[in-house]
Length: 561
Image (cartoon, helix red, strand yellow):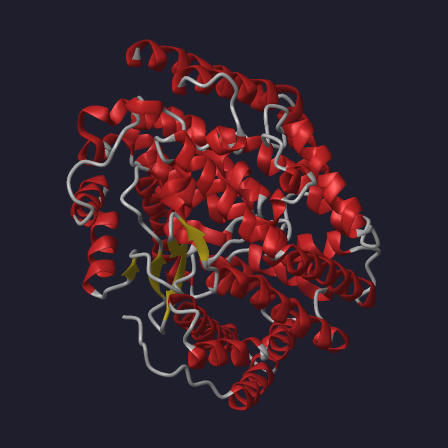
């Protein structure tokens, strides 16, 4: 259960205890003895990481809570000290007397990561890490304190969200104008924060001996099995095959919603007057989710019962609650916790099942008691997108007779983001390969990438957006560089699970469950290979997937007419 009390933490004591355990680990005379110290070191790591998760959650629940803000800022200031401890831990693993036995029992991935992380921290970057954290917090604070005037009301960005997809085109246009006026009002702040983040991250990379932040960024993302060259192979396929496919989806959308020209404020309005809607009052979502997870598998049944019994769900939008959605874990039990904002709209189901996919994987992987295995950075989104697709047989609970329309939207909407992800990924590589680029050069580059990957996008003469500023709302660019592409890589994998579960649901579920049990114990490529999922980094891997999806879409559109 989430504890609302003060987040207390003694970093001095943790450092002392950690140092003693490292000494014991290094001088162990038997494998059982060394394994004992290994487990206790991980227990201490979880002590810090769960306290940090708790402080973040408490702050995000109410951005106006000054005490929570101070606590979060304080524990973030320990980041560099904690990274030093983790670096010492990795070094100890690599030189462990009984390393072979540890690898046999706990898997090789932890040791691959230990080697990968060897040069991601040194005391010389402490000030840079503190500055990076402060800038990220400043970015979040802009959104947490947002107040947008719309239809004679002062709304948060979260409260504005339903208006952005209003059936009334004029309302959604005005809602987008209000939203981007907020971004325009804070343009100088966004420009400065990104500029300082790029320079700060570049400075860290140089101090650690890299030529740019790109390699350091990949290492921070725990990427042991794919490289910038692999990402380029996939992006090239998106450019040649994905972009034309998405352009066709947009043309179909334009006809479906009955507009002469698709504008940027129309892009998320996918179905016109016949759009699916949630059935029943919003309070029934949780009841339907309980049925879904009870029937999906025994594992998801017990998992969901634990979540609800311990009040590990926060799904109500509130003033000063951060917008967006995430899953985390808390306490010595590493209990999963879901933080989402549900608005009574169809996308709530995608959001909920997505975050439950993360939480379920945490739940199934926590037996390893290794932080890197509970949150596998290089494959985390495979679990969330996978759960979205595996929930399809139960969607009728939420949409009744309109289920087929929702399935259509759910399938195409993720593909609509495919070129966005590639644009963001290419933009991030540009940012860190050219850290001295002027702010306006970055905006021009972003607009150039938009035009390459999103040639249908029409900003309707909005001068602010046409200047290349729409990336301000892509939080990962600011907070977690090189992560955003993982959404599309995971979608590529989840659609293969979807394709299998259409005819062989049990097989698809077993593949997914096995991946969850492994969690971060396997690198991305090995994890998906074990589930019989083709890698997106293989040449010509996208074409057969798109052909299958096109066939399904053609059949679905016939049924929906």
